[in-house]
Image (cartoon, rainbow, N blue to C red; front, side, top):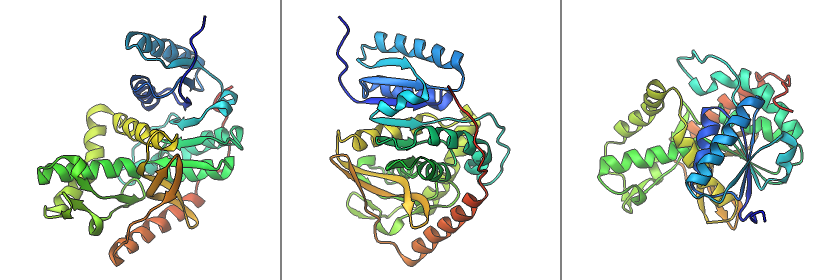
Length: 305
């Protein structure tokens, strides 16, 4: 008799380095009852599914893993978009934006085919603020969040904790705005052990800015950090726990990262008070993203059956 599936149904679109790591993390955490894997490459998705099934059995995970098609995703509680088209990133600045022109057509196709999907969509594909907006506007889905600023925030709190020699859980602070060069550190509301910051923040911020290159130069692509961000956000978006995540959502006429408070799976913005300088930096990021969005290609590229 077939086992009864307990837990939410989650879909992952993309079977590359990030999608593979996301799938491993979800199975290891036994978060979904079923995990549907979708990719434009049939041989890749079937190979990955088989490998993940081996993992689930060996690790005694209850997650059931299946190769799937885009249409199957309509039955999911949540869908994680980690697709990436083939392109060579040679950018020296705005590195995360380098894939905008390459990824937008495929993401637009996925959004069209998931139009009206009522579950939660987490967009990981870079440039995440632009791609989250494109997906939301094309799909008309009501619950779309971009993963980016919460990874920046997690890194910020981790680095600050190291400088202050405290546990990361004792640091409270947000990084908002664009995931990338125009990220905004909310220093004015950051606390360490309940007190204002008393460490060299400039050094922390400089190390925060260097961290992506450190990872990229050593292993080629950031994959584990985004997996942690997705796991943390899924638990809140699916109503398993309450808490705050910094996510890319609509902010005026653009999409960028702001803190979102989840209560029973429902999300509400909770932007902290900003100083004039922080507000100007956030407005500058919004202006840059607004301009960049107008240059995205509007063509559609079929990604999978």
